[in-house]
Length: 522
Ligand code: KIV
Ligand code: ZN
Image (cartoon, rainbow, N blue to C red; front, side, top):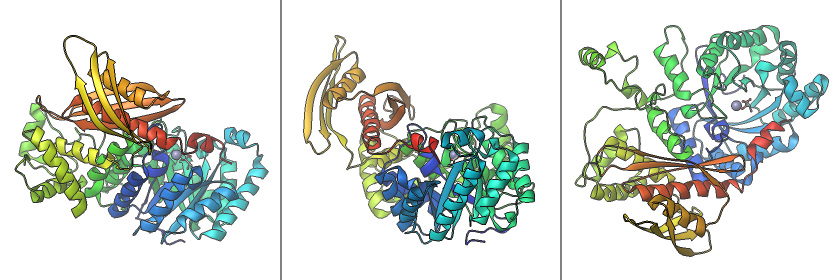
């Protein structure tokens, strides 16, 4: 067994927010965002962090390598297709970790065998060669038969046996297309444990996609059948409908420990903080009624519910807000609030800041409090999201924006934009409304062929001085880029959200096309 071997009652948490999550259309993250998320995952007790796909691009490689160098406790894992070049590149990146892991995979279902043009014998040979190669580099090797749930059971047993014989220490069973059902998920793990020689020597992992909304149930069913590693992401981020949500499986194991007698090493009080961080940097807001981390997950508005809650919280609450890092405080902040009060308030909200970070956030808070009399929790959450998105090295940066509105159109936007290393550019554009004029200015200063797919505004709190959070989605070819921003001025928030999405587009152009890489896995 490897150093990550778990006792019978311990389930390892493998987080793939930075790999499978980041792969979902529009969720591209910057280098510093990835490092920050990895640090939070490490701190909250995630056993294994899948930090990226090092062969995909120089940027992915650098991110995995730096995450590996910085990791304190977590095993750092990189993904590699079933070929020596991918595996070598992956090792180059993860070997800097105190506890590295190589994760190599190949599609084993008939559909995937067609793509790679390998027959069953050819595939078994490929698995033997590549897992052996990975194991010669690293003593911690995970192997996955992609699309396992649609692979013929006999062949699945055969390939899993080949991977174990070649030295894999963890066998991950992916439900790549979110097709399986909880009973099937359990039966599959039970079958492999029963039929495959050497199965007792390795850890089985479960990796479920959520296309039918069953990812969490399927992961837990696999655990009941003997899997001891759950692959998951924060907020369930991931390809298509996403992956198993970390917060759901961890809280299910905690709350229903009576029927699921397993433990994880996760500090659940860190859940809310990282959930907000991932929502901000990915541009994927958490749905209001999302289990565990949705805004309404602990809100009780109906009269009957409120009455019950006042008498005994357990009437309608199966977990306490503080268990996931939510504190019920009513302290409203304002321009007279000091740095210590801000630090305490942010800590209640799940954000632990270092001194330098606090200094920066305090300046932003003061600027907001000058414009807004009362600063509520949601304003601070929006401000923290804004702070995590601010990037002084961003390719496009708004230097100045002035919008002229009136009952007589067209509206006018004067904008100065810093474009890469090329200095500042100025334009005076018009449009059908202030937002249209502002977006036209951006398009003239930085011509591009991405289409605006979504423009959404919502008020963070109430009142005419409320902040607006604006989400923008741009589409270029098949790829979607999201941007988000908040400001008391809706037009400023719109401009920043648009620029944010464009910066992600620019960044993405320096990367390989991940989807193409994944579908050619072999
Ligand atoms: O869904 C999947 O099959 C994957 C593999 C690479 C493990 O993400
Ligand atoms: Zn996946």
